[in-house]
Length: 406
Image (cartoon, rainbow, N blue to C red; front, side, top):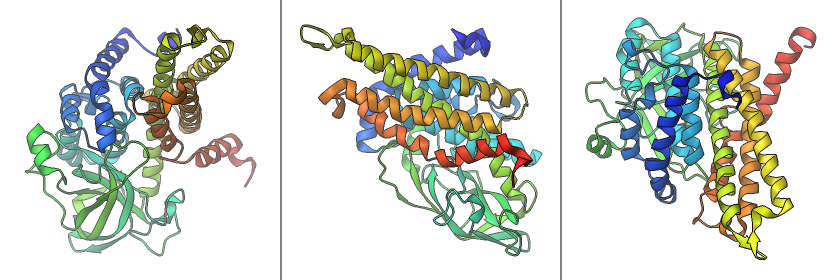
């Protein structure tokens, strides 16, 4: 196994811990949460107890004191069983928490990161808007400076945890006269969870002592094809009052900050897509060795051999791309191109692998009796979220060409 190129025995212990949790706790409940489109509060509490929301953050900030490679293994193992649980940890960590860790003042880190790293509250990242998807520089949310605070107006769509979360990093235009990708600033905004009673019941998801920003509201929950147990909504900023002390990083430098955030997030999403693909392969191995047709297991047929071999080979290739990008990030090396490659390849593989998994399961694969139909639905968004496949190809090409072309 090539895993020893990237991982130590400690990493394997983390992997095995999360693998056991995923199999024993997540797997038995995943179908119900998906069918009913319920946020898995009870399992979120268990993941918080295991320290999964703070894997890469230092202990002095409430984290688990591990590293980025450990975090990637967590996402990978969760996604092998259920992508909704994996994105709950991934979006919270790389999108909701990492911008504060990377760009926050010491005061901001001490105030917000311990709440996020322990899973006491959930976080999110508000970038996408109705008119600014792949064109992230087209932000139209505005922030008007007024005395000791800013007033934010606009909306962010398809935001993970917009309902259940309480701490968000959002972008807004602070200099309307500036060039499109300039004049954008990042802010930390806070709100109460929409599932207040559930959060109180399980003991995570809400902190009454956290000051909340007036005018930050979550709209209706999206009814999605996949990731149905993940909370996705519009985050509305309506005359939202945000103290100046909540400006994250330098004023008018938000565009560079969120590009950096997305680079890291793409590795996490690559690990998630990789997990979906590998989970689908494992389901196929179980099914094809027990399903009998023409008097023998269908795994004995050459056509099935070809399908399984292709899936396994592509999964190994995706592992190298994802693990290598994570290794580069962890060691402070440039990783933009590698992150885009990992996300691109793993996400498109997840769609191919899960589609093939449904085919190998035949009619049963089209029913909710087997998890491969859920995996197929969960896979598609990996080609869209945190930068579409087309955007990843643009990023890769620009990194390859550099200054050779305009």
